[in-house]
Image 1 (cartoon, rainbow, N blue to C red):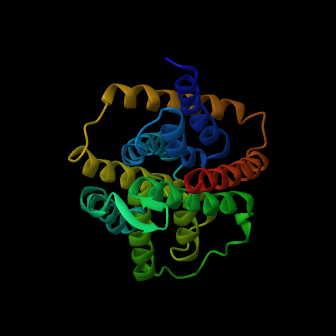
Image 2 (image 1 turned 135 degrees about the horizontal axis):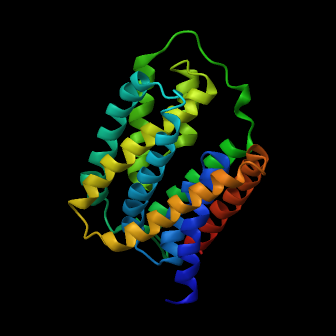
Image 3 (image 1 turned 135 degrees about the vertical axis):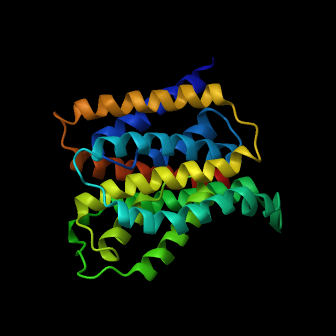
Length: 262
């Protein structure tokens, strides 16, 4: 194993560590780690990311069930249109994108570059969500199920394209459109992310050859990181750490844009 790959596996621990310390956000690093350190094709990386994010979100969900923080009715309403969009995006839409999308003089926008650029934009939005204080979100009095379902479709399309859970889109939707308090919105979003990601991954299983041994090791390391993070959370201010991590994600997003366009 070379040094770069070793850092990739350490990155798996780091993903879980951030999730355990802050309650979310760490999974946004999964695709960059798989592409730049493990050196996987972006299509494969986004597929593997769905599995890794799905399993790690299930761990978070299992922790929240005894605390009764999950609104299962809202999770069901959101999940059905979302996982439908994720599945069809992974099973069919990704396959329809041409390998070479367009040319501008000497620049060629390939499918791989387009996916990484889209992912970098997702990182910029996610970083803003982590840096900004969400306590300003106002819980609404009435649930708007139609708007919630439409938002779920958008989240599903996004998740399918970039292989990220989209918690930074789901949590505000659950607060503003479903009327959930912030604590319940965060817990419910983990269940939605788990369902979306794992159903989306099923679409990839039919199109790709999956390295199950690698996925098991990488995901296992992430889960170990989660429990380490949960332990360390007793001694570290998770909110301040999340804001600092947000700035790190912002810089990573900018780096990916520069690297892919360069």
